[in-house]
Image (cartoon, rainbow, N blue to C red; front, side, top):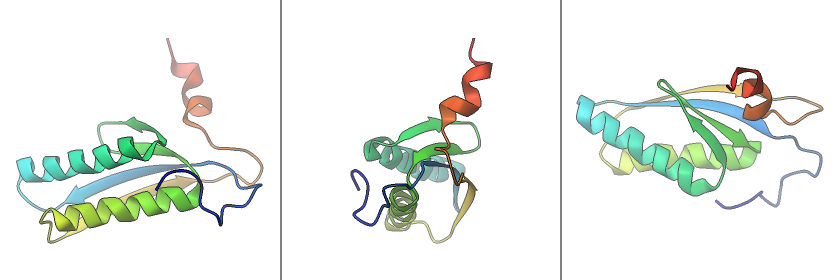
Length: 108
């Protein structure tokens, strides 16, 4: 999952996706699966920010959606029977959507 897909259009803009993975199970087991998902995000090479309730990922549509599919598969392969994956997606027609643009005014 490295880099942009061949299908990515030259004028495609970066997007932000907030992803929350909620694996069913005991608290410790659920956290282990969330940690597994965060390790996949880190290994993807995409820019990301871990927050208390979700992780925000910056990149192109196809690469982020492939990553979410990998996270789902990893949870299932790690023994999850059920998973809820919540997404919030921000897309702009004319500009990249970046975490830095949104958060710059809050940095100390």
